[in-house]
Amino acid sequence: MIVRWLGHSCFLFYSKKGTRILVDPYSESVGYPLPPLTCDIVVVSHEHQDHNAVWRIVGNPFVVKRNNPGLCEYEVPVKFTGETFVFKGFPTYHDEALGRKRGPNTVFTWEMDHFTICHLGDLGHPLSQEQTEAIGKVDILLLPVGGGNQVLDANQATLVVHALQPPFIFPMHYKTQYVDNGLESVAHFLKLMPQVEVLKTNQLEITGVPREPTVVVFQISL
Image 1: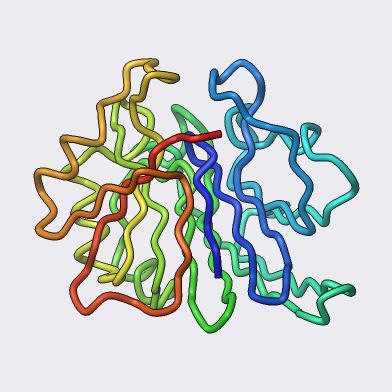
Image 2: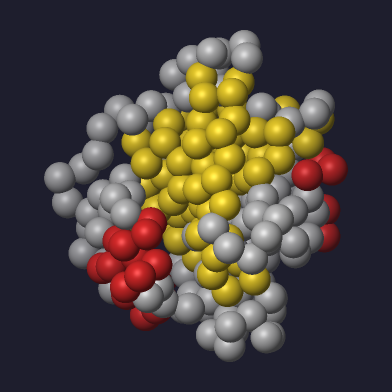
């Protein structure tokens, strides 16, 4: 499996057989130089323009997003690869006030090439024990860390890592040369994590999980 960070909370996953799953594409106003993209499935955590820009995707991908207040599940076959993916959506909030400030958010999980991926979207609060148990085992966690009264801050993000205990942690939604908007840099979160790997690229091939939980920081190279 190959994963590419495209900036902000947007990731593109490629399965060994060639299925392409894109998560949380952002609008032109965000600032990252997103290239033209094609994919088979788009996952949208919530309806804010820095996460739901499906209109920027070339072609007609299947769109996965929560359309009701509760849990949701989608089974999505991909004809040309013969793969079927099951997406589970867990209702959460964009803030600590039950969504009254910034609205709802959906945590999505799915399995690809025997790895369980969890994208937290714009999670704005620590997970409850019930939510943690419902999400279950996670191999790759896509984790907002930028705070700024928008998403988890570094300390809250650390609590989520301890709760889910994923081998891979990919931080997202933080201040960069492209995005500020009151967010903190990823450095605040990295200081709290014992094992960090900083890449020189925005892409990683995953063939197994590390022995110790490892934070992987991607570099934008669009």
